[in-house]
Each structure stands twice: as C-alpha cells, then as structure tokens.
Length: 357
Image 1 (spheres, rainbow, N blue to C red):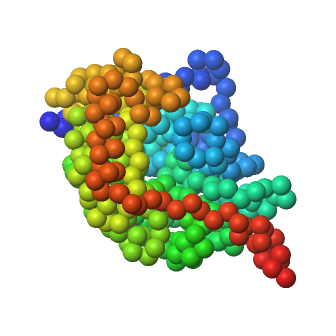
Image 2 (tube, one colour):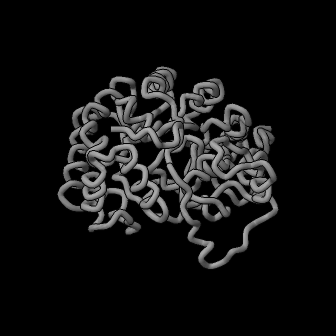
Image 3 (cartoon, helix red, strand yellow):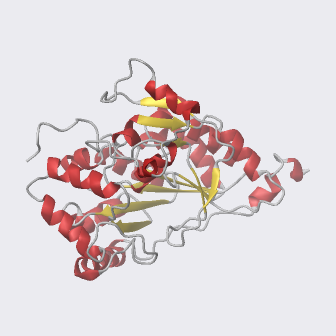
C-alpha cells in the first residue's frame, strides 16, 4: 500500500548526507551559491537548472564491465528521479546530495557541442563510438528546453563520427531527422531503457520518465526507420520487476529491438540508504523481502563494487535472473544482433569535409 506522506513526482524521499563533507566542509561556491540565494527553500520541489562550464566533455571509461570506452554527459543530475540510479553518487562530487538534490539540482553544460567538436577534431583522435548518457539521461526533461543533445548530434553528423545513445525518454524522436541521417552511414545505435510493462511500477520506480507505452512506441518508430535499437532491461530488481523478464523481452522484440541487455540492481554508496527509505515508504508490505533478495545477489550486502560480479550478481536468485535473460535471448532474439558502428568515415570528414577535396 502506498503511503500518502511521500513526495509526489520524485523518486528519492530525502536528502542524505554528502559523504565528502566528512573529510572537508569546503564547497565550490562559484556556482553552488546560486542554490542558497535568499528565498530558495531547501524543501521546495522545484527543479533548478544551474549552468556549469567544464573544460572537457568526453570521458575515458576505465571500468572494464560497463560496455563502453568513451562517454559524455550534457547534464549532471537527472530529473527522471529513478530511485535505483547509480549516477546519484556522482552528484556528491559537485557538493550536492545524492537524494532529492540529484533530481532537483540539474547542472547544464551549454558548451557541450563546442567541447565535443574540439575533441573529435584532434589530430591524434581515432574514431571510436562515444556514448551519450554514460551517467545521466541526455533526453531528460531539461533537454526539451536547452537542446544540447541535439546540438551534439549535429556535431557527430557533421564529422561522420559514431555515437551511441542511452535513454528512457521518447523525446529522442524529436531528433529523428538527425538520427536517420547518422543511421544512413551506420553511425548510430540507440539503447532504450524499459524496466517494466506496468505503469504503476514505472510511476513509483521512475516517476518522471516517459510512460511504458511511449517507450515501446519509441522502439517501434526507431526500428521502422532502420535505426538499430537495443533495450536495456536494467536494472532487474528481485520481487519488483524480475517476474517480467520474459514478457518484457517478447514485447520489445515484437516492437523491433535487435537485442536486450540487463543488470541486477546494486545499491552502492548513498543509494542504499535512499532506496531503503524509499521502499519502506512506497512498498512497505514487501520492503524487507526485496532488500533481503538484493543482498542475496551480492554476497549479503546491498553494496557491490566487484568487477565481474557487480552487474550480474551471484547466488541462486541472481542465477535465476541471468538464466531467464539467456532464455529470453534464445527465444525472442535468435539471429538478431546490433551492428558494429562505422569508424572509418570520420577520418575523411575530420576537418569538416576538407579531406574530400
């Protein structure tokens, strides 16, 4: 039974202590002071968009088990409010809480497209797929206003550079014109996250994301236009969406997806406390069961940072989940595969097409 005392439209129900403040009380006041202006209440549910000016935008990914080598994020923090999101912890590096701050204090990198262009035009850069949304969703609500993702896609198109997108927002269809142009040269792939077929589950798990219907329509439309789509069944949470693996796989296969991927939920850093507080407020009847089963998948703890096991888990419950995903692939995705993106064209277009002449 859902309690009436929860904060509607948000995933996290509290702000948790920033662990870095235990070491130092210093904050980056150059832009964080904006949050403390007179009249801004700490318990308001309003989202603030705060401009930041990083010197670089493309990140080298050193983790060996995330399936990407380079990523970029136009936004830090995410208004989608997914309660399980691993990116929450990164908000602490900016002086914010991984709880409500992560959903209500969104950092905007307006110069992202310029930084991207400078990066991929470097003489020593050899094209390799760059993933947009390695941390936070590049099509979160802020994108409707700022259009930073669209500007970056235009850069990828101009220089014929491969790109991959991860999103759970149907807003991606706004940019279908650019995405189709990239797909013509096999320069783009899209990963759509769909964690449930139940709207009631979606509303409390991912409160400000696109509806399940909209996401399935997105997979269908992209696929019909020849854009390769992988669906992320991630994360799988025992006793919340673990029973949906086969019906989810069947549904996204029928929508045109070429493959599926999954992870088992892990609650690292501050996310453990945030998730525990959330589930006791939103699903009190099964809170202990879910938490115990998550611990069962990770050696008796909610927190699992071990490379090689953190994504897939271990133990009997994890094995059941992983076996179901294998069965789903055999049953619904036989003879399908995501294509390898084109990395050859960029060298020709690296100087804005000048190498053609």
